[in-house]
Length: 169
View 1 (cartoon, helix red, strand yellow):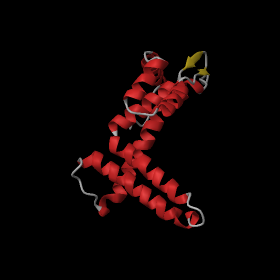
View 2 (cartoon, rainbow, N blue to C red):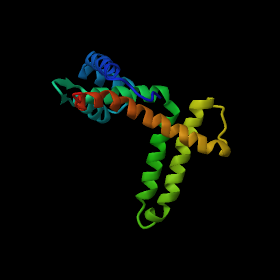
View 3 (cartoon, one colour):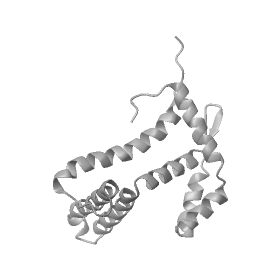
View 4 (tube, rainbow, N blue to C red):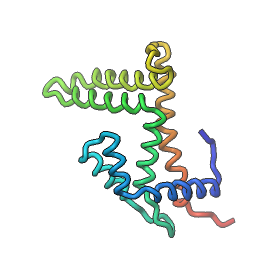
């Protein structure tokens, strides 16, 4: 992860992301999502997200497409982590939604969900044959947090340069 980025580098990165996102039309995105196996309802929601634009300065930026592209890059790079995160969130939500016992079992559901996330990360790191080691868990949790925040910071860094006013010296 970079410690700092200049305004020119951020503007170039934003321009490249904007050009890349402009090359994909809404219908192309929908078709690609359906080919990936997503249900049409989910594909429509993601396509709607991709259509979100905002004016930043004097430019109109396709923020939705940038977010969808970054999510796609993250999932391609960290496939096991993404699947483990979805399974973990689903299990934790299901356990927490149980009537009467849900509030008592929610911490256990969260722990079980975190186990799915760590297992997915471990598969990304060592392949399908890598066994989960308890002593590596703290390091894995740090790496998982770094992976999530790295993609978040990478996207915001390029956008924030446009939002930050230039100080006159």
